[in-house]
Image (cartoon, rainbow over all chains, first blue to last red; front, side, top):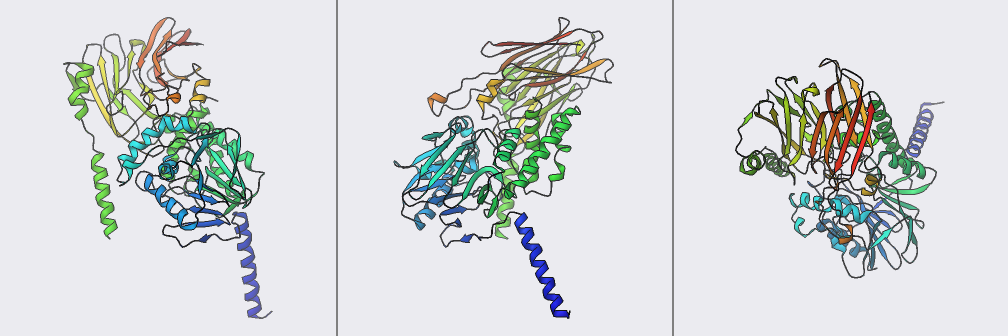
Length: 318
Length: 259
C-alpha cells in the first residue's frame, strides 16, 4: 500500500472509532437546531423547543434550568418556567414569536425555584397549571423560603415573582391532548424530589425528565436516594430518541443518557452505606464518599457535600 | 473587563453581608433568654464546631465540645443552643450530669440564612460561658425543611440507638439516639388553607440509665427532621437505657436498650 491509501485507511478507522464512541455516549444523530428568535431557543425535535440552562448558582443568576415547550396543532404545553417572573416572560415572548397557538397547559416538573418561579408569566384564565399530586404541598412547605431568597437577590423582577399552585394534580399518569398528539404525564415516586413529574411526547419520541435527569451538572438530591435509583432503573429498558434533562445537553438518547447519573447515585449509595457501617459520623462523611466522581461533574463542590448529608440521613434508617 | 469589575463589586457586597453580626444578641436575645445574668465569652468550658457553609440547610451538623471533664465537684449543667437568625432562635436546652462523663453533644439543626450559632454553657457553680460560630447558609434548593411530609409521618416515633465504647474519658460510652419525627415547624405560610400544617415537633427528650437521668433536653423547631443526638455517658455496670420522647402534640414515645 502506498502512503495516501494508508492515510485514508487511518482516517476511516478514526471516523469509525469516533462514531462508535458517540453511539456509546448516547448522542443522537439528528442535530439540534438553533432558531432565530429574540431570546435563545433550541429546537430539539419537530415540535419541541428548549431554552437551554447554564450551569450557574441559583439566586445569583437566572436561566439555569432547561425549560421549554411543545407546540401541538391546537395547544402549546409549557414545561417549566424558569427562576423568576422575568425568565418566564422571556419564554412566553419566544413562544409568541414562533406560534399563535394558544398556551393551554403549564407543566411543572417539580418544586425547585429554577424551574417554577416563572409560572406567573403564564397566568391567564385559560391556562391550566399541572403538577405532581405532591407539588402543591411541596410548594406550600418551601415556596415562601424560595421567594425570600429570590427577593434578597439582585433580580429587578424579584418583587413580581409569585408561587403559582397547580390547578390539576397528577397521580399515576395523565394524558394531555395537544391536538395532533397526546402527551403522557407520569407522577413518579419520591426521587430527585417528592414531586417529580415526567412528560413523554410519543409523536416526536421525546421524554422530558426534568431534574430526574442531570447531565454535566452534578445531581442535586432533595428527595430519596433509593427512590431515585429505583425510578431510573425502572426506566432503563425504555428507549427514546431524545431525552431532555433538567440540566445539561438536550440531544441525548435514552437510556444511554442516564448511565452517568445512575453511576453517581449508586456510588453515593454504596459508599455512604459503607461509611455508616464503619461507624462514621454524618459530619465527616463527605470526606470519604463519592470522591471518585469529582472531576466528572460541573458544580461538584456546590452540591456533592449536601448530597452526602442527605444520603446519610436517609440511609441511617435502613 | 467591565463585567469583571461588576462581579468584583457584587461579590464584595455579598461578602460584606456575610460578616457576623451580634446585633440580635445585643438588642434582645441576651435579655430574652438570660435576663441580666453575666455571660463570660470564652472557650475554656465549651467550644462549638460546624461547617463554614451549611451545605444542606435542612441538616446542619453541629458539635459541641466540652473542655472540662464532668465531675461531682464541677461540671457542665445546662447548655443552651441559639441560632440568632432563625424564626425561633432557641434550638434547644440540654441538661448534663456528672454521669455524662463528658458534656459533648453532636446534633443537626436547620439554618434559614447566614447566622451566628451560639452555645451558652452553665457550669455547676452557676456561671455562664458563651462561645459562638458563624455559619453561612448556601445552596438554593437547601430549604430548611423537607418536602415529603407523608413519608416523614409514616415512621413517627421510631427510635434507634447506636452505642460505641470510647477510650476517652475512661469507661464512658458514646451514645447516639435517632428519633424519627417530621419536626414540622408550623412556620410555612398557609398558601392554600387545605394544606396548612400546624407545628408538630419533638419538645422533650429524656434518657435514663437504670433510672438515673443521664441526658435531657427541651427542643424547638430549629432541630432537623428526625432529631439525632450524640453524647457520652459513664456506665460502669449493665443496665437499661431508656429514651423518653414527647412531642408538641403530647404524643409520647419510649425505647429501651439493654446494655
